[in-house]
Length: 158
Image 1 (cartoon, helix red, strand yellow):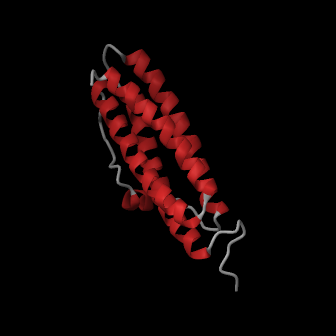
Image 2 (image 1 turned 180 degrees about the vertical axis):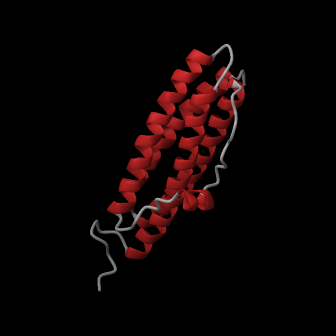
């Protein structure tokens, strides 16, 4: 029995990465639903801008959900796909009944901060495993999300 998977990574390292990616997937899914709720329920003077911006965010999050799940499959594992698992694995909590624009934006900032934290943890695992593919994916996500946090904080006057 080989200790190397189909893409040349040690099986034990690939398993650790898949577990971390499943945690990341769970956080993306819960965050996606939060942002979807902000989009549906936002009210206030900035409604039109925020409603449109939140749609951009959730569309991008949905793309990333698919990419993370596909990376788990590439490593030879199964992505979690039940909301009950997402809730158990996620550091991001459900954010219910939020409609105030700035409160929605703060929720998005916190969500992105959590995703960045998880992706940075993943980078440590990818380095040890020699997994450039997952590292590149996480690095691209971090770069985008850091810029988004900067812009959202500017909106909040921070």
